[in-house]
Length: 514
Image (tube, rainbow, N blue to C red; front, side, top):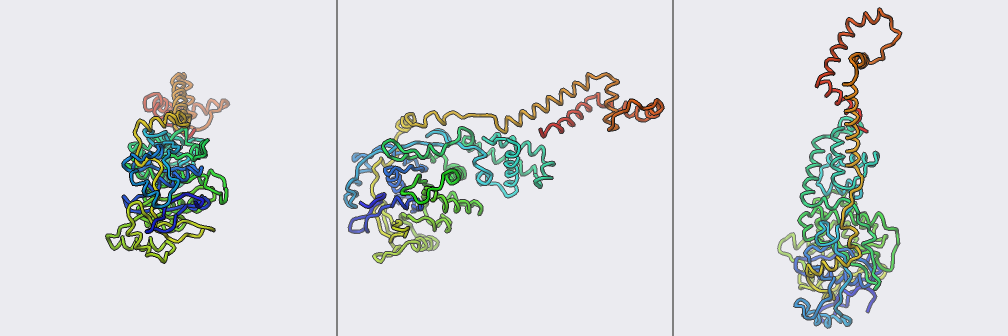
């Protein structure tokens, strides 16, 4: 058998056997096709193949079916009944049932170990995308991140960001002189979007302990790569949160992993299911970032595979970088569908044995039109392929089986309990408390002072200069008629409730920036 991951093929109605070369697996790939044509099974067999080759995998389980990777398939299972026959048809001689090492993750902490990152690590660009902010609101968010960096205010969770936005609103006038207009309306809009995110359960994504990328790149003692499965069935209710989290994870891999050139096999393979959610209504800056990451991350040893219903869901500049392609059936019911089908067919290297456009339209469930990179990264001739059966269970495992796997996992207990260390919220609260205490102390001292001291201090504040002890008696008598009268009026006002409010207001303004 050719070196690499066996995809399928064989039989009288199909082309030669198709293999995904491990040496070119980090050149990225595409799995496309209409609903119900077999994309999930294709994703499952690729995850199995990479794991057996010692390559860790990260994938999202949108429908809840991929948990079956943790359990060996069975001939008695109703969904596995035709698989033995299929294996014989395509020449899959060493087909066996086996389980694979799986770690379950969940942003909500229900169906897997919690996954967290910090607000600072997410960054203003991705956070603005997550919150669906306008350009002006994104500008305020950038100011918040700049101030946090300059003033040593760690932004770990949402309450850190919320408290910093409150501080920015209170000091908007001074900040506007330095950063441009700081609108209270924009700050309020951001706060409301943060509230919506909390209501969607997104607050659990932010905090510590943050996910360590090394925990996604483990290889077991048996040589199999760990398959990391993110529970995404509930997460799909907040598609913006889903897409932003996966893009953040991809960006973190790009920024933290060292350059490795062209390795013999990837260090990690990343599957991005429902890829259209990443690009729908995405601003150009975000699409450019995805393109940059996709173009350069392969040199870090990471392969990225997009799974979507139609290749047209992926921007053309990114689609051109996806060398390994598995195209399940596309249906053409409208003129737009026919145009997209024709464009999809034109991206393949032609096979004189059949029309690619016709084959994409006609392949059945579990079949696909495939093209894999060959020597020197040249795309292979398109072939009609019967996808091989999975070795693991087709369909989900039970809740009890999932819980048992989670308890036995190396990650058990590492991320379960959140840690709330001192950060922006606590620091700003401490500064506010200190300013309030100092203001109260100053007010108490003012009330305890003798009438002469209060008159003397009031006169100093009024005149703005220290009264000289060497002043002549004539000068004091002369000033008594006007200055003394004004000072007496000021003292009387400061001794009342309005005066105390004024003192607190002055002192609060002085200490607010500390």
